[in-house]
Image (tube, rainbow, N blue to C red; front, side):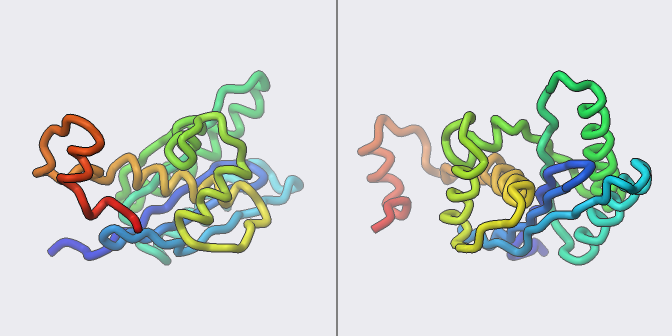
Length: 187
């Protein structure tokens, strides 16, 4: 028997602040389940922070039982040490997801922005405002890392949802598409 709804966990990895966001998909509706950040103390040993990242991701998985896991890929920077630390944080989050039996889906920041706003160069504020519209929430997150993680989850949904019905066939233009898909028109 197939689940009526599915939950997607999105992660924005970081060694000081890790963002997380969960969405629930039920048919054609999408809703915010939870979003937030894990703040890690800089005074903690780097390996203690990695353990806390693993524990937080594992706890989120146990609490919400997501069906999918999406994570933002690190972008390439000039500081090799920062990239190494970020890669470790990402690896630990991925390991927690894999340990729970979830498949891992990685998206570049540009792909996530493109998916949410239509512009791969959009700013964090623009992505967050679009997420508020898509998911119908008003509160501004205290940290953009939370909305970045939420964006990864929504991006994953957009990448895997079937936009065209299987029986839609080829269309010759917008008029033809609308005539074959009247349910897509919002009034």
